[in-house]
Length: 518
Ligand SMILES: NC(=O)c1ccc[n+]([C@@H]2O[C@H](COP(=O)([O-])OP(=O)(O)OC[C@H]3O[C@@H](n4cnc5c(N)ncnc54)[C@H](O)[C@@H]3O)[C@@H](O)[C@H]2O)c1
Image: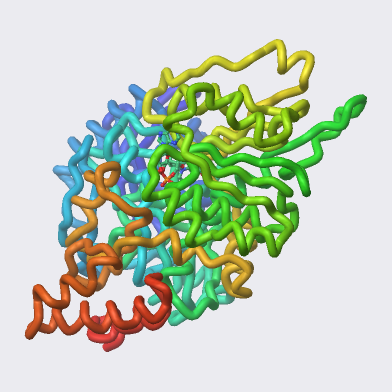
């Protein structure tokens, strides 16, 4: 090695020694303490050379290093074949759903290694499924957050999870303890990397019975204690935090000022386009109950059944009690949706427009209905890297219209969501329409766009087909006389008594006979 930067893969760690595989094909033993915080097996590092010829002055390289990374992965595998299995590892088996490649999700039993001092072992109890996981499955390694080498190192999918801490590495012992309930804010943004639980990690994702939480989650303060009385609300804290993040990211500027006033216009006019899906439903709930509620809120969609259910869950009557004129409208038959929607504002246009579907015409409608200084938030995540739409730059210049995009919330957004749920200010239970077990996870993610209803919630220690809450009664009849039939009958009775919504009592019933209560 000359005095140039060389790339390494961290092969394994044994008793404080990190074994690195270098670009030159050789292995090097260095003290683990000499590596940057967050280094773990599989990490990529750059280094120079010390006097003794050993690599030194390491920096962690982000997950996306293109060709280098592929080359090193191959090297790593080549040399790994000659390395005996490290001793002293205590394996723990867990069932998990892993992404192997495009549309290839598998429920498997995998082995978790003993945790390191800077890691935490946790039991996942609930995980709600996001459309973004479907998109990750659709794109495989091409997805921004999915590692290039996912075919060799499959990742556990699912990022809306809540559970219980089982074992805490020494480094975090003063902050967390076994038995604590937790949620994770997956958009870590660790050192600018897009890596996130549920997309990028071998041992950390929601579709698993047990996970190893990597150190960067704690370093970024993204492992949050959760005191709520139901795990599913903890799962919903993640999508809610994305919604809250979007509302905080919008901004406005007073004429003559360069100061960005953050957040939607309080008492202003807002629209959520393509908003009768689960995320739009959460957004409407938040808009009505947040501290910057608009005076007018229009939610559009093209699906009548979804619009009808949305209006039942976040009702215009409830909104009116908070001073919000809330209307749900179907724009499918509107000849000129821009004129139709602008008219509802008395011609002024909307201060805040959220686009909840990655559809060109919806973005262009959003642009067309912006008021002066109107802010369009492109919230939906497109799968096509070339996705684009027309935006009126005359209005950008003369009308100060502008655009933002958010792809996740931050830790404060998650704390705000948890706090609002705990106080009962918002109730995202209405986002959930289906319940299932880990056995149903992979098919649900793959087929998500074609499954009716809203959010699908999975209990990872349960075996249950994905079932609509509305179908619990029918399932109970179909399976009468079996334990499943009894379970569905109980769930049907509980949910019916709660307005057809999933609730804490239903969760307690579904978890009653599982190993987590043993
Ligand atoms: N930005 C973030 O942080 C974040 C987080 C989670 C999800 N998302 C994204 O948010 C979006 C919404 O999530 P969801 O789970 O509610 O998705 P969804 O697909 O269930 O809902 C989208 C809605 O858009 C409607 N729609 C489709 N085409 C339309 C059109 N032309 N006009 C009007 N309505 C139309 C559909 O009927 C549907 O009700 C997704 O793209 C998802 O990936 C973003």
